Length: 300
Length: 315
Image (cartoon, each protein chain N blue to C red):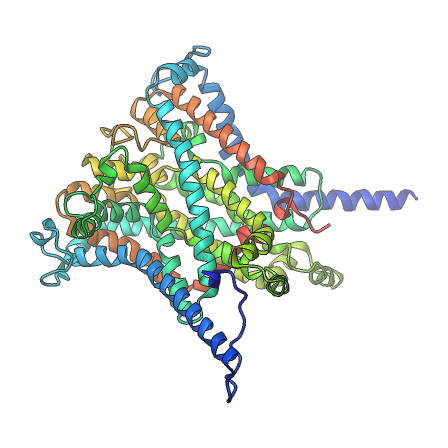
């Protein structure tokens, strides 16, 4: 087990005439390697096998999905088509894209200037503002849902749509502000000061100088927000449940299970189709994502 | 002299306008979507209101009802305590372990990192559905395998004693966020300290105890406190798991009483939905919401008092 915390040292090039001590050291190193990688493989099984079982079951026939079999007798790829062509599925897909796409765009547009002001401008009440941002970031959405629902449903008659979820994003998102601010603090002030000497205003300085430098943080915020909307279950449950034409994938998936009660194969095929886009997106933007996660915790 | 102060005042005013311009989206947002509903929730907690007839003042009646007569409140609080003690600590220990493992892996590091991280990205509803299938007592692969090697086959999401452990398994599966945070902080530990400890003949446990842990303790604390706050928000997984396992799923979900099996998966956020949107008891839902608010703010306060860079400025 000593491998777990031993320092990472480079393997020295093998000397031509190995002494007994050198052989012993190489043997220990090899055993460390075996121990670490066996553990890693065991862990990988825990993380990957659920995906594998979901995938295999999704391709089983209706009859076989009722058995305890793990491996499909024949691969029924048409299950994916069946799910895709289920009435409503395409609509949920479009709704989710609208919610996630528009929500992300509005969040970025509204949150970047606020994050910049909180990172750079000096004004009275700045710390109070920052504490409010962190408090709202940590707030369970259920705390304010009763008056918010009354507001959107009774005052503005927007229940049965996703607008009560999208519109607030035009008025910033706390987590995005926080993450962007943490990043903007790391950009040296001199860049903006120099631009101001050249007669650049604050908005111009933000757009021309800061934004290009903050690309990694902006990418991370965009991804997080997109994923948040994509995964959101509570919001659509509150505002869209009464109108199936406004459902999102996360919300619709559950009713899919209701409609195909005994068919784990079709339910798992639908589950796969809901997971796939986020996972594909991750492979395209892996670096930005990991940077964002570390920014929230480590730099904080 | 006079002209200077006029110029200064002019500059100040311009700055104030600029600040206002940059901050205005947030000022509106925090007022309309945080302060107003918070005050309104406090107001409703003293009212009887079903959403149709006008609200009536009832004093502390809602509060008394929730704390003494509402049969779901204390089970939900007990479950939350269970989750805080067991799920949060297991997540931190497992996250640290996986983070340490990934910093040691030399061959295939990219593959392992991606494999360990991916489940974190699975949408909660989809991940819960997947686990409801994997762990279903009838045909699920997990019990299938347990049975074939002669181990007992628990009822998981269908057994009140096993539903929270099943949720914990699901939470450990999605450890990716903690793994990345721990990984980054472990790589920041100065190597010289390990080398010095090794020269002094420290065992791996001593190196962990006296070098690794002191260096990453702020991150451990961060993980614990954010874990507790996330537990206050724990909603989708227990609700969906209960619905799928009980077989009661409808489009509107109105008929499902949360907590299946036997209130073992109840959490506080579910009670807000249950009272406010299934029973149309706005007052009771507001009381739960305020309890939730106070709990969340206590732990957020802890996080901010930690005094590190969370509130740091550059001047």
